[in-house]
Length: 487
Image 1 (cartoon, rainbow, N blue to C red):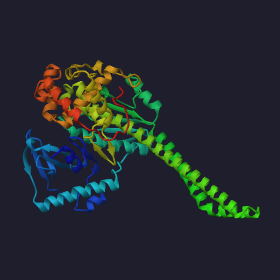
Image 2 (image 1 turned 90 degrees about the vertical axis):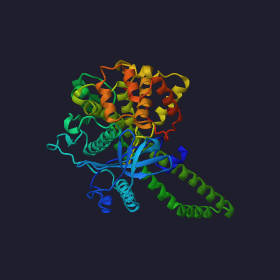
Image 3 (image 1 turned 120 degrees about the vertical axis):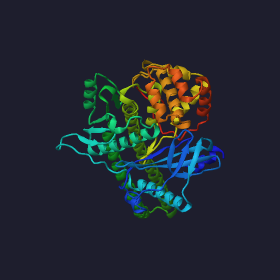
């Protein structure tokens, strides 16, 4: 079946769509009312892949050559998730375990009910606590400890996003260290720019990025002016609503004003034809003014909302980027030994930074259009470093600042993003054992040899196939944002 037909049959884009939906089990009233979603055990189907990976959920056979799986995740005491995985080629499948038709239909209805309830109800509001009226907001998760001096609404939003992205991390690259055995990273949201500067000063660093990760302290720190942006947007929306109401009132009063004008013209003894002409001119002029004002109000509202959306995307994308580094540092390093190669660590951080988030869903499989366009152009014109050079690159070759990202660093980041997208999503090989091997061999194996062991072929052969996969990709609609992360 042609890929275009497969893509049309699914809501996913590209070769894999991983949709991470965070909803506390049992907290969705709509879903729980339909089949006991929150408490009753689910009967699941399963796909076992040739590499031993087992995916349990709802099987959707899109054609004779491929399969999709809505993977159902219901970890005890943690949010429930549905991950749409596919297309999976039949050649990668060792065994399919299907339910009888009636049970399959019931499972499909449950999955649909869960999604409908999640969309209608939104994410569950996290329970924040604080000591006194002036203390910071706190939240304890199995995967991170949270503290915030921002307002309650912003703090809750940050917790919801962090829960979503930390769970997305584990679904994209399964942890090699159990949460119970790992040091939980701390996340600190600063309520002011001054507080964020003080945090940086205490750490001995100076960055313009809205978020950072300090590995020595296992600390993600961030600040955003989102509350101010949201307040300005709300004030502008209120003013525009008042202008729209005034416009509607004036339009409703137009017939009375025109009748009064006609009466005045009649008293002035103008001929009927002249009176009608003047009235029609006034009506036409008002219609033109009214329509122009309506367009202005609508344009202003759209622009204000777009600025708020862009600010949210930038901040939460950067927060996800730095949170990934915390996850990799604490959950992918057994005993603190070794670490992911720099190119893979930064590449995966970008994949997760750029993942679109909408109504509580994170779509990991949608390639960022700006990065993809830049990568494809670079591959065509030969301006990018070779894969082997990126793999061998040291930390200093990735270093740059928010204000002055060097061209060489930008190209390193771009290729790293493309490699991570490929290895985690397009042609996934990042199993727990593979990741553990990468970290364990960090200091003992030459980087290119380590990479070739991961992908199972010489780097030159991989690069040729990787180029073809990247150049064949089609992006989702562009939503703005930087092409490469600002470091």
